[in-house]
Image (cartoon, rainbow, N blue to C red; front, side, top):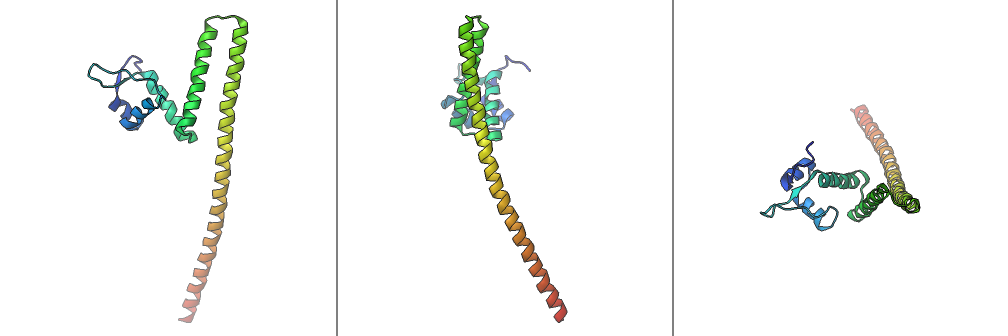
Length: 157
C-alpha cells in the first residue's frame, strides 16, 4: 500500500464504512490529529491517520468503548509511543527504567479496564441467558398447552 497517498474524506469514509461527518467529528474531538487541507480547504488523510481511525473503530465496535474511553486509550498509546522514541534516543539507563516502569503501569491500566469491561459484559450476557432460558421454558409450556387443547378438540369431533 502506498503510505504517501493522500485520501479524500469521501474515499476514507467509503473505505472505512463511516460517514464524512464521523471523520470530521473525530478530528473536532481530538481523537485524530488535525488533518491537512488542500489549498481549496478539502481534508486529505494519510495512511497513519486512517490506521488510527481504524483503531478507534475497532475499540468502539469490538469492545463497545465510549469515545471518552477511546480518548484515554489513545492518550496512553501516544504516551507509550513517545517513551519508545525517547528510549531509542539512547538516554541514560535510569530514564529508561522510569519510562519503562511508567509504560508497564499504563498498559496494566488498559488491561484492567478491558478486564472490567469483559466482566460487565459477561454479567450482562448471563442476565440475558437467564431470561432466554425462562422464556424458552414458558414457550415450551405454552406450546404443550396448545397441543393439548388441539388434541382435545380433535377428540371431540
